[in-house]
Image (cartoon, rainbow, N blue to C red; front, top):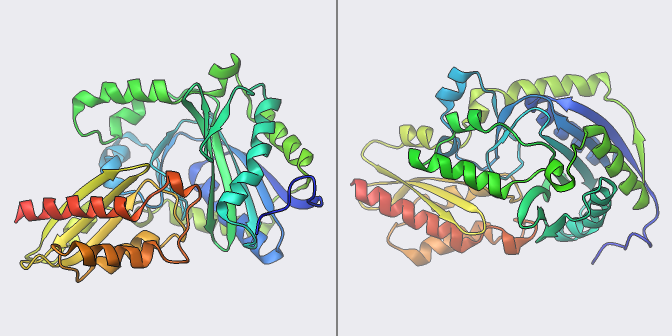
Amino acid sequence: MTEESGADRPREAWRYVDLGAVGPAEAMSLNPVLAGWAKAQERPAAQTSVWGKTHLNVGWFDDVDSTLDLDLCAERGIEVIRRPVYGGGTAYYQAGCAVMWGFFLPGANASLDEKLARFQPVLVDALERMGLGEVGFEGSSDFRWHGRKLGALTAQSVMGVDNVGGFLNVATPDLETYLEVVRVPDEKFKDKVVKDMSEYVCTATEVRGSAVAYEEFRDALLGALDAAGVDVQAGDFTDEERTSVRDIAGYLGGDDQVRRVSSERFSAAAPEGTTVGFGNEKGKKLCRAGVALDGDGVIVAALMAGDMHVSPPDTMERVANALVGAASDDPSDLRARVASVFEGADVSQADAAMGVTTGDLLAAIDKAIDAAKGEA
């Protein structure tokens, strides 16, 4: 069943919170609170915000050790957080360089792709209101201008609601800090990282020739929502909600959360007498696998990670658990074990054509097995 068109849909009353400039832990804590409210009240909620502090932001499924040198981050005083339950890769955000939004939609009366299709025109309208009409969608998610990425619109089912949100680059960050702490396979590739990012990522300022302030973005998005039949009812958080935000923020900044997916921890915890290997596979998205093999080549522990938007949040953990006990030289069994989780009815990803496949996961697992056998 598809959702009603904008013309046919009755006007909706949404709760709205203007978060303004927020730090990373606070920003990631506010979303669960709004999602919880939307689920409990059975009403949509929305927020807009802009990064108020420079930091590194690790995706829910990311292996933090494959992307960052955390010790150097601590030495340089660079804050690192892991996004709670939200996917995607590790990103560097400088204060004021990106604006964000989130829509929290209760119920499950449409697929994630249908949710994206509903809000694509809203974002196109908002871009036009900001003088960014040349920007268009590639696939259902990426905002692109002459092939360069300006931002993204993503959808994920988390915390009992469908979350449609994204970001828009409004200014160019200074990459010097990022390059100090990012893990690049070879030092000589750091110049390539700068070149690639400078050519691939663009900003609203580049597109229209003048800066886009947060307030302009906020007003443009709210205007587009109003035109789409949404009545936003602005308000602040309650005292009880602010307490929840503080509690969640304290948890998100902890080392255990940041290292929730960590190849270094995985290797250190591998049973004695096993050999450990890791492998990456870059399809439409990056998949990473780690395995610990016993002397008979049986997988006794596994890790699954990567840059992806997959629901529910425990999907990759379940895939890793399903691999335990598998013979590493039995490809049919490995495929069946991965598919038993990843192709299950409860697993979903928006714009699946641009997402992760069972084959991608298996390719990463095969590389990890080969690496582990090479260490034997």
